[in-house]
Image (tube, rainbow, N blue to C red; front, side):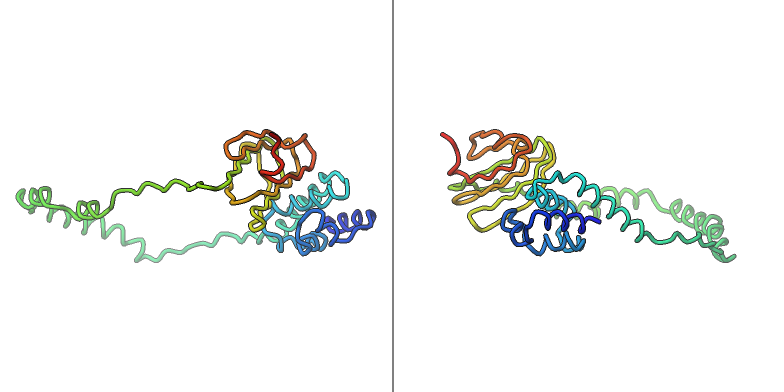
Length: 235
C-alpha cells in the first residue's frame, strides 16, 4: 500500500532514494524502509510520519493521503496481531481452602484478643515511649538535594516553541543532530558552542528564541525553511 504509493511517485519524478536522501538529509536506509514497509527499522511512529511528509514534500506532493495509508496499514497489522480471547477458566476450590477463613475467624482471632487483653498497660506505654523502627528509618533519610541549575556559560541557547504541528531537523555544531515533530504548546531548549543548522517543515508553526532574543517564526505557514544560527539573524 504505502510503499508502492511512495515508489510510484518517486519514479514518476525520476529521483533515486539517494537523491531524496541528499535533499531531505534523511538516511537512505530509512527511506528504503518506507518503500519496503519495514517501519520497525525506523525509530518510532513520529519519525515514520515525519519522514513520509518530508519524502513527499520533496516531490511536491501533499502527504496527507500517504499518512492516511500508513495509519490504515498499521491498524490492520495490530488487528492481525491481537490474540484470540480464551474463555474464562473455572476455578475449583478444595474443601480445605473454603474451611481456612472459618478457622481464622473462630480460632485465631479469639486467641489474638485474649493475648492483647492479658498485656499490661506498662508494656503498652513502653511501646509508645520507646523509639519505633519507623522513627529510626525516618532519621536515616537525608535532606532532599536541590537540583543543580543548567550551566549555559559561554554557550548559545536555542529555544523552539511550537504553535502548530511542525517537523524539525536540527544539527548542533556539526556534531549532534535531531529530527522530530513538535506539537502545539511543546517547547525544546538546546545549547551549542558555535552554531545551529535548522530545517523546518512548517516555518510558520514555530517561534524561535536565540540567546534570549525573540526571533519569531522563521517563515510562512506551510513553507520549508533552512537557516543557520547565529549567522542568519538579521540585525
